[in-house]
Image 1: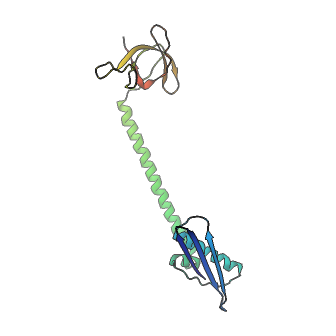
Image 2: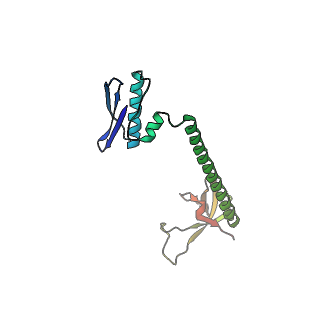
Image 3: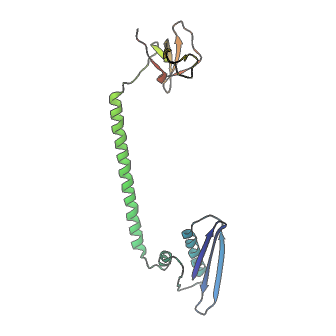
Length: 189
């Protein structure tokens, strides 16, 4: 069996020839309808030739082509058990290295969280407590460099999920917006 492939910008074509001991030639060509590399096209051509040999009830097959690895694999010169064992060893090494990397990453994250949590004080807000609201640069109240950065005092009327606060001013008026807890700070009187 001779096999070959051609990969170019227009697509992938593969072909193979089976030659019988009497000299009769059996040709087969096909066009692959998916993009693949040269190596993949060689594998496809070899597989097509082997399928054709099975259909013709060939008992003994001599394979000739460009790729020595494909030919040796097809002729089973590489022991299947040995190849499977080496492949499994490679995969287990990858798994061990991957697990080690994951464990180191998790330990690193735990150390960073511990260092961060030592320096940060939790900010817990309660209903009916006084707070100041940050004036962000995109707000209308932001007047420039020397303007105040905080506006207040507000009373927390309701705690909403995901650190959102529903606030009202001291007179009892409720503003239209809900404020994120990151944009407020406690106001101590």
